[in-house]
Length: 131
Picture 1 (cartoon, rainbow, N blue to C red):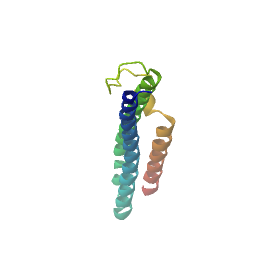
Picture 2 (cartoon, rainbow, N blue to C red):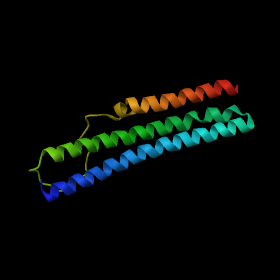
Picture 3 (cartoon, rainbow, N blue to C red):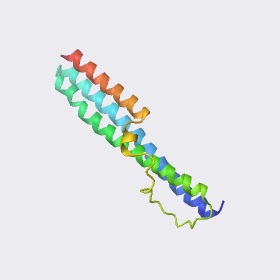
Picture 4 (cartoon, rainbow, N blue to C red):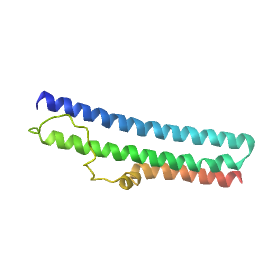
């Protein structure tokens, strides 16, 4: 493996790591925001704060799906560069041609569905309890 290939792989790995970190932070912000809205709802006995929690949860789910989709495309680029040591390593970071997974597939991945559907179920339960 050449130095150019190693450097190219490292650049791609850095992007993959950043996308995974972004996904982690989005999940953290989602839980923090929903918990804050629950606290406001409990304090004021106002259901609108619980109902409002649906919107950011869905928006964060879409954003998280986008980060996962990008991460998967860069993983495909990484595999291509790794498996083709004789290509000209111009350090391209264009992963748009790697569409093995679509955005919808990332949005509906098991990990995201389990996390966000569970959170939406908790919000639905809290809505029922507050009313």
